Length: 495
Image (cartoon, rainbow, N blue to C red; front, side):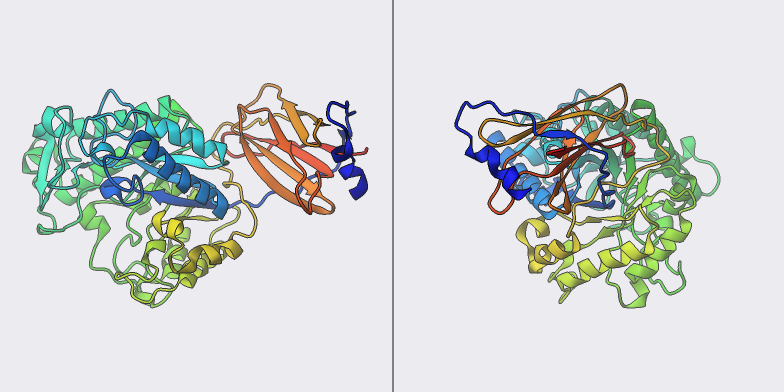
């Protein structure tokens, strides 16, 4: 068989080649499933772009380097911050261009970063989730502000808390504005997910706990206990966000990444100075239990030990709250490797946490998100070397069985060896929903997950490489928008 596979390389240029692959009943192995993602933060230029004011070409080049690294590490998703503070890293009629791109809010970077990111991520088999901050208005006191920014067009809805300006979640206009922004992006961009993090009411920094200046809002809209009312405002926003996204595109996943401890003392061994339930008014357990999201990524940024903020203890508690069997993909603090926040933390802490999550979370919904991309780009503490073993095989994003979008069609597959010795694989598809195509190939006795191909694409090429000729067997399967795998079409050499 090995000699036969090398024969095409001996042909003279221009010589016709007969088809050497024919349909086969062989079945490819089921692919591994695991969500492997990283946040790309744009606020304060944490991850991208490296600084404000870079040219469009330089910004694109930086982003492509991040995407190439993600692909090389065998990640399968990226979470890009597109609305850090009432602004936009995409073309918008609702909000001005972000200050973090050009250094001047409202100034166009000369291209559409989100459109570029979606296209380039998908080329590499990566999901792209758009990350929004719904209530933060100004992230830096020195930040320039456009006349189109909400702080200028609707200043009556802003509240100063400490050093920051915040949009009041108790104002119906504020919640509706954020919902419109999220729904607009969902409809106009081919994103795979909508994501929000842990910023609801502000963290109590620079001002007393509970002192958020919403007296006027409470007098107008409030009822009962003010803390309960504030939580109701956030609950309503989360519930409506989920509904609005599903109304626009039912298959787009909705993810939330709250503070990792629901309340101090829950479970009993857990200690914390912050009570997210009473300080941020975030009842994240309620959102998970009610199924108002498709994945929850609690920020479990602490070590496995000691017990007072133990990663596995917290993750197991969250898994127990997951009554609707949504995805539970914890956030892990890769940035804290050898950091001032956690002196001496080794890279092995991160891979050990991944191993724990694989054991604790119900299969096949395992996964995690790295905070943030910069340590992966710099191989901080040798983390990438460890991930090479942890991510030994590529993985598909787990299926979201509760979402519509199944009925993945079986493709009609054709494979021909071309002049020059390379193999072209083409396929057509019947009616059905296709988000991706999974291309798998067998070399000798070993199957390999070769690539995820965007749903609109209909061909793939193989070239012989040193030590590896063309594959014996090729399989192509459709992946529906909800992650469901369709029936494989398979062709084999010399059959």
